[in-house]
Length: 243
Figure 1 (tube, rainbow, N blue to C red):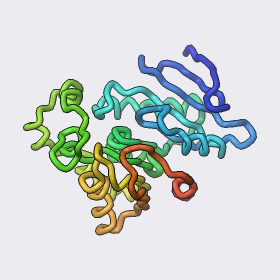
Figure 2: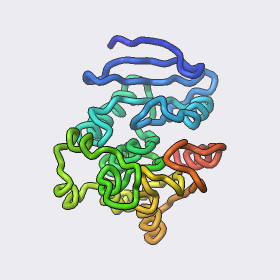
Figure 3: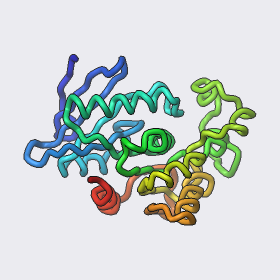
């Protein structure tokens, strides 16, 4: 395997191909390195402050590119094999913590439902959980993403999407059954992925059914920025829910 070494925010970065896809692994410093790791599910360099803080604590950070940000099963299955590879080749823990922002939340949530045995807990941020809302545009969103991109990626028409039963919100019972801890951050003024049509559905379901979920709503915040001004609550949640 050919590896290209560089630096990322002061840490060693490894770039390589895994099954023909671009992959990245960020290594913590030797003095506090552990086997725990984050899986950034999309937009690797977007709003990385939380990930930087976790790497400072000794965690690894991994990423593998998706065929599309709209979450194909083949991308989820590839991530599962990638997790096995990181466990075997780099000694990383068998479970990861997906970090999913926006469409990355779509990917992270469906990955946790499809492979719960590979996930310790889930951090999602302004997540796309209801495809009728985004990119479908059926709702209050005023800045919806063009549906053409989703159609090109999946071949699914809007009529087919109405009948679709594989949205992330359809996976909530699986997450609950597997006692998946979730921390979710979102803005209350998001015009792209409205919280009331996405994250609020998950929040309500988990709270009504005894699931473990921690919510941080940012007043007046739109879709960006992701994360919190002080990421301590996210860090503490993740640390408390990893073995």
